[in-house]
Length: 385
Image 1 (cartoon, rainbow, N blue to C red):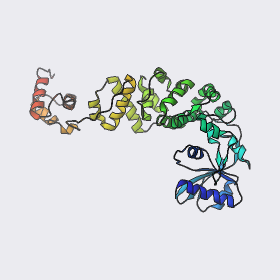
Image 2 (spheres, helix red, strand yellow):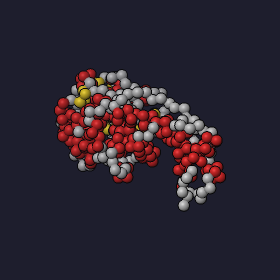
Image 3 (cartoon, rainbow, N blue to C red):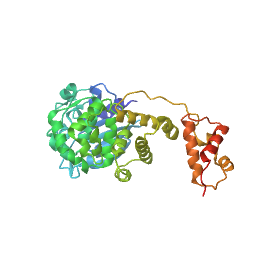
Image 4 (cartoon, one colour):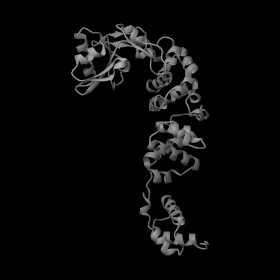
């Protein structure tokens, strides 16, 4: 059973029990414009307790806000009771949620008109906010007063920009102005929520268009730690296709990454990657040596970052390395100590790093006699005291 079939079964069950029920939100929007759907959202006049009584397997995912997840053949279908919301107190959640029997009231609380279209099980649309026309015209328009929507939850500003990246739509003039006016409120939003929206924006097919809107709204000044990205206002962002690169850019010109890392919810791997990329840029590290040290996956990211910073465009080329690990060197520390009569110390590792670099960069053959000769010449005349 596919997603849509599972959703229709839920609609049918609710309707047969005497309740209104409709598909709503992103799945309706995406289906109307021919995009694939990845989840199912249903809004209904049935209360959560009724919904849970009508289906065999349910999960109480958000009873306070009227949401129950119904499991149909292991497919999750989110079902939420028609509701109206009071004043938002933490720029995310309403102080109080009240259930209602009015679909129109429920749709009025949503963010953008294109997400406020309801569809019944027969495919008939209910569109009191005019979302279908905005969808056809490729416009992102707030439901009701834009200033109110963004003050309720400033993250909607980033959601709007992410929709630009995903769909290629244009933000309606009044909505764009309200985004700019309310952008400073983003400092009150958790970094976890902001990070997720930014990642979605970078991965969108229309990221270049979205980043232009982001600068128009002055988001880089509003997002904590991102003010440094204002220097790239007129850069082409086409080369950046990996979200981690945007966060690397934000950390690139900082004296220290410690505070930056402590204020964002990066994973251990993400922190390491950002640190490595920033160091490589500052050191102008050769791509070949970077690939040796960190692998091709991160090398492709480094390549993208270099393309962006230089505003050039040339394809990534895989490199054939003579060695992939220091253990493959034709010489090791024990051999060096036999050649050089000198007390053991950090100098051995420094010498091995130098040999490693020369071999990787094809400046020296990985042959024992060649490396031994280099060691003798390198250490000749060195004062060991």
